Length: 138
Image (cartoon, rainbow, N blue to C red):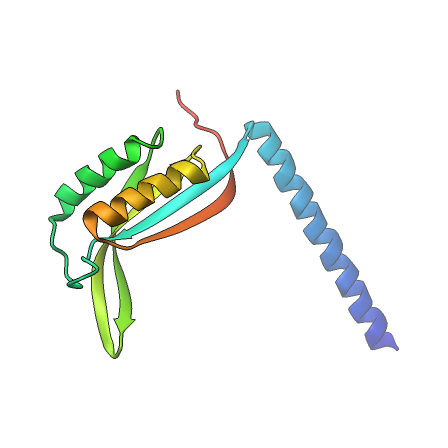
């Protein structure tokens, strides 16, 4: 019986602590004046779908993809990373462009992804998450 009361007390303490954390984080967000929008992330693998190898130079691909994106969205952050995945028993190493976009919509993302995949013959992983943001400048 004492063990059950102890566990109940610990549970209640955890609930109170977690709800306090949630309230304090919401208050901090409100003071930052954050806006709500969707955050899109495109992971563009530069290996050609047909050959499985990278055909285009990375810097050239960045310039082409940057211009394609800016024809459809108002801004993008692009970073270069390495992606790895299995094809059968073999590990494939692929240069990947990570593109983060705020303030776009599904139609513009669909249009740019269709353009990139058809013109460049590469794969694009698309993710969309709700986000709160604020651009802070001096």
